[in-house]
Length: 474
Image (tube, rainbow, N blue to C red):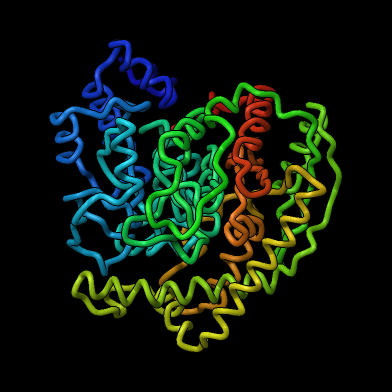
């Protein structure tokens, strides 16, 4: 197999070639590694190489799963693969080796994926760009002077650069959708509880975070969700089960949908004209496909929602840093943890138990409000981000002004956290490009448990306005 043939296939297609003996898993791994060695020095997407683990998987025999033999990269953020390094984007984890597999990684193994490394993440995943001091900045393959997004920026850059067709990603405030939008990819954030967080914890960031992938094709995202979804024993809650396999949704008509168009930010933020225009064009496309689109306003208090989100994340960050220090045997200091991370964790000291309880209530009320909104509409259409990908260095996690950092981060993502706060699914699709040649994503969200609906609509849009051949020139 030649590189251009490899890059033309998605993960489902590569697995089919392996199944019929047209190519071997070893050959696919060699192509992926060769491509990574060629482009990773330019973009810094892969920060941990797990070649021994990959070779051991091949030697031991791969599981007969749906992705048998397909190369795969884990995100370097709480993705435990036994015997491999994990940094969480932090100097605090220097030299740390995973003692075992977590549940999601075990399901990746059962799917037959060949995991050969980990992708760059900002420190503890709290930034919307990927520029950690520990591992350096990941650069956007479309323009090396700009961010690939975060926190799954390394994953998105690797896929956009053709190293592999899909990669593991996680999303606690938009971290699948932000980099997917920034790098011209599909990014589906599943419903709360759809994929497992265990076995050590029951949820990430008190239910805000969820894991899945960034991908070039919709069918990879759907098939990967089929391979990894479902509760595990002891989960604190379960997502409504799907009506049918997610992959089967792609061939089903979505019906005539009621689409709410929202281009005004949920919180104080200016939406770039190109992002608004891309969303309005998507609305016209939906109308041409037979859907009913109308402008709408969400009945939520974006400022209160964001304050509650900050309280939840700060409390979790303080707990995580304390646990990380105990796990690694290192002290939290300026030499091991970036300033904004420390500041975020330290802000938890000003929170009372009552404050955290109130924050939970605010987010639950937001969920009620969005739930009732979805009794009137099937889908909410909005920009994914408030602006195209910013320049490298614009959001400095080790800076000295937390107010500027917070304003820049929150000003960039006024839309994505809504779905983390409520647990509802959302998907960003690569439907536009900026005048400067940077990708712009458009986001569709729906009520809890309706990834199937989003996939049906997205497949209809993909057929009408395909994106598979749009690639950066590296």
